[in-house]
Length: 98
Image (cartoon, rainbow, N blue to C red; front, side, top):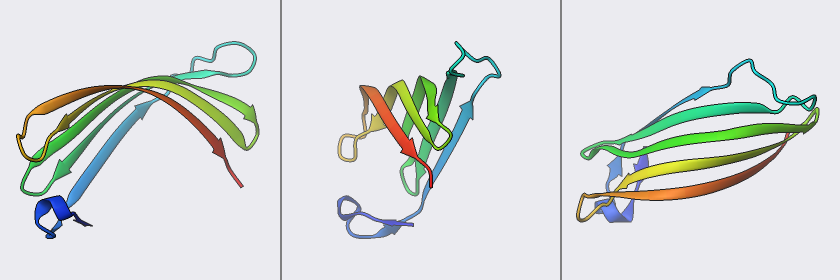
């Protein structure tokens, strides 16, 4: 449940679904893993409002740290014109688990 001033300050339901595929293939002795992800967002009264396709590498550093490098192709439906806009995104994620 979200509250957005662009939606007139009304509460709307947002559903987000992500599918990530990490094949058993590992590159080099550092166990670098390629991955592919697809994600979509469904917003009440607007339907599907965003779709993301992502391709990248998960690079473990230590047992509790990981670096992810990826490219994302993002389609986003604008609120006013309701037209689809495309973005190309380069991601760098650093994860520390404790």
